[in-house]
Amino acid sequence: DVKVTQSSRYLVKRTGEKVFLECVQDMDHENMFWYRQDPGLGLRLIYFSYDVKMKEKGDIPEGYSVSREKKERFSLILESASTNQTSMYLCASSLLGGTNEKLFFGSGTQLSVL
Amino acid sequence: SQQGEEDPQALSIQEGENATMNCSYKTSINNLQWYRQNSGRGLVHLILIRSNEREKHSGRLRVTLDTSKKSSSLLITASRAADTASYFCARSPSGNTPLVFGKGTRLSVIA
Image 1: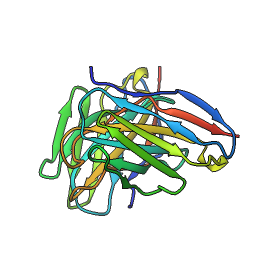
Image 2: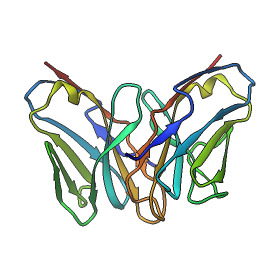
Image 3: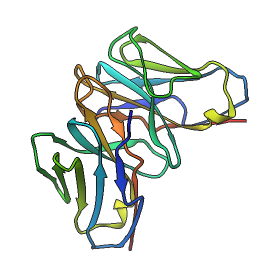
């Protein structure tokens, strides 16, 4: 079975902390994505990557950065966490060049910033 | 980017009834996909319909696509309590850009 694993299911952090959200996929997928999900707003794309060491901004990249040093791992970094970054974070991956194929999602990380 | 719009936002039906959810979008697409999300979990891919297809089936799921009206519908037949979840449409814009998700329809199936 294909698998996208997010390192934490629940996370509580303090304002100003640097936060790392890790995502690992075991499917040898080229494409990886980070979304955040908020009630009433649906899923919004933060960053994505089509290849190792490559990254592209999504719709809401402010306050975030990413790292993709290895093909299977895509990390989301909150440089200085703020309360408005309290959200559900979802990692996803897909095969092939382009993004037209289906996404495989992790179980999500519910982040609370206090 | 503009999100697709699902309609209705919430739907409550009895077990055994059919559930229909609609999705509208504004720009051209390569394909349109439907996903399901159980409460507090990740999304699971259900079905993908390409822009040159009009209808697709998968088990109790039926998806239609009308590119002239820029709309799609997801029909779940003979619903079960286990179908209770949120359902999202996601459009794949033309070109090499990521999926754009709608805000979802929350389906409740009452036993």
